Length: 161
Image (cartoon, rainbow, N blue to C red; front, side, top):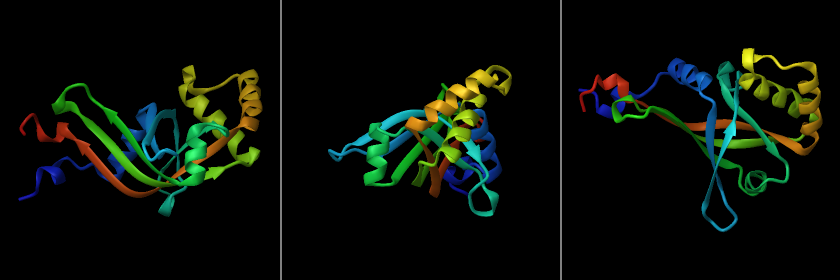
């Protein structure tokens, strides 16, 4: 008989679909005093992983504490969660190695993709794209390369624990 843990695990396809519909990822990096540093980020999925698997990408300010932490230690844990009642909880936790991208030709399109995800209708006017290209000069792209995954979907239990 399968364990409850196995019963609630998401398939690769379910993980991709879940992440695609979510808006915020919580990023835990290792702070300089030894404490976890948790921060929310907007993100997009890009098919850059092994076999074209989706990877989480985000951007942040180059001088942010997140960036400093990841420069010192590129390990980060990501968590995306949904559901307000126990039987509806679902989520994904990813252990990752972070690649920091500083090239403006990588960072600017990433920022435009991220902002486009949250724009009404999914498209940005040219003025907004120009503004985000300008912001990219002060930002870095964060590519979260997955090393381990945990997922859960309590809805799969049908209300039975």
